[in-house]
Image (cartoon, rainbow, N blue to C red):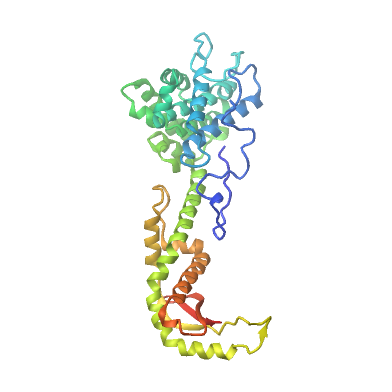
Length: 404
């Protein structure tokens, strides 16, 4: 299960909303510092199995998808859970299922469907974790004695049946096994070490053949959909290196989150750039309409005082016959922000769709700041301000007013 992600309000972004995976609801009792359950299971308890698989899956998903976020595990937490898995791997060759598995109950006389639930599913997730740690955190893997041995034993175990499930769910179980193993990029690991693991290469080919043959032709209760089979084949053939394919729900929302974070950073950088770029043209046009501003201001200028001070007034707005564009300024700001490489392409159009109102407000503020320091207007009894910036056929039109 991959957790749903909170919806992002692009018009009111905060730092807490972005730049991380944000589960919509808490992870319950999940804690990096608390092992999910003692292993092996002492009895065939479905709830214990579900809690354990859920805990394994939560940790594996965050290890794979939450890197460089506030939800990422620390090195100490990664090492602790790695050690937990290595130390709790079954190491009794007399067991019915052989050594190299996790969470096998003491009573090993189980039917096939129970074997998938209690033996194979936790083992898929455990192997995916160990392979991911070995590949992405090699120093941590070196700190835990027995990781390589645990991977070898575990690989032999999980491919005993070439990932096949049991009963009517056998085909769906196989696709689920591919999904679990892909979180750890296990198939790419096997492909990259084919000389060391020729038997595993044969096992993976057998899985492919099964998907292309038995699963594709299955009917009735054993039917699987075409998309799931095609996705599984893509994962097996190297797609497990692609986060967007391995964790699509998380990835989609994560990209929205990261894009929102990036656009929020652009919102900090772009307005001053835009104001500096357009102000010379705006000032030139404003000089031409200053007399109109004087007249408009004096038409509404009050004679009465309120508490000893003249009431603040604003003249009617005057439209400058000038079309401006902010695209190049936003492009420049995007270049300065330097977002993480896996964020989708950022564009002025996307930025304006997300943060148009906030951007215009800040650009107005920046232009007003330049008006206040401009020598051309210092002798006036009023200040010149941007009243509004409105979209126009050829870009944006700026409306100014006199305030005093």
